[in-house]
Image 1: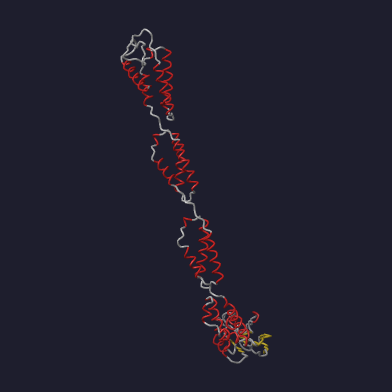
Image 2: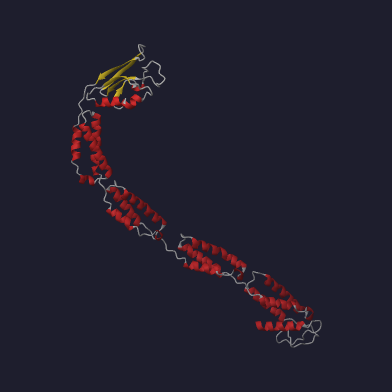
Length: 420
């Protein structure tokens, strides 16, 4: 059927009619697919089909094989089929009316082609490529239709409309991108870290838009100008980022990290640790502000200054040992009671890991004073070589006291004298 259509298309006569058995026995839409655009079809008009074949053939899917096909200038008005069984094909009729032959006017298209032909290559070079492509295609199509004696008025009119539209778009001139390119190039040396995140993001958006325009061969001057203005505004809107100095904070963190924990009172060390951890977190935060850095440094400095060294308790321990080495029976009850009480207090301080330097010194002083205040019981002989107290002439212990007490008291006296 495609061969038949080609023959009909090439027929120079204005009115064309073909009737017969087309063997279109596989699917009903075959007629419309081949002839429907340029011809009127009787069997299948308005989607009404007639099974003109009344025989039996297993190879056929449909029986509407007979048809009347006419050119568009012929109207099909009545279609009917008579089942006469005279043969394996029923009689198929179509009433047709010949339309008055109309004259196709190509005057407007001729004018458009003449004017389009006067457009120079130099002029087209200034127009965006998409328009140039469409203009050339429309002009070529118009020339073909002008040369086609069988072209319909609809084809002529459609070609004229297409060419006219393309000619109207010849004002779509390519934009001058020189200044936009220069502005884009000027941003190459900008460093992201020098600007705030928000203003840098706005610049990147404007750059993306500008590059898209630069890469668009069909961009017109309006689009170029808009991209330029937006990019310039983004550049002007860049805000310098705060230069954060972390040197002092880093120095303080390193100073604290170099300390030995066991030299400090546990509670003061534990109180400082959260400030150290917070300072390290700020150091590692690239987005930390100067205010946050300064605050962390201040807090860590205070935590460092609040650290307390563990006091030296050697003298206090020695005093307690000395007191524990004395014989209570050798001294008056009152003075010995004072020593006992101060020893208890001194032991509490000695065993307290949180004891401060002041508390240790106070305990040493109190126990020393109590030991200096010891008075030997009356009746004991005096041993002036081992006085209990500097300048004391009270008799020393002799009875009921072991010989080592003398040396103990002497050592204690020497220790006390050295502290005074």
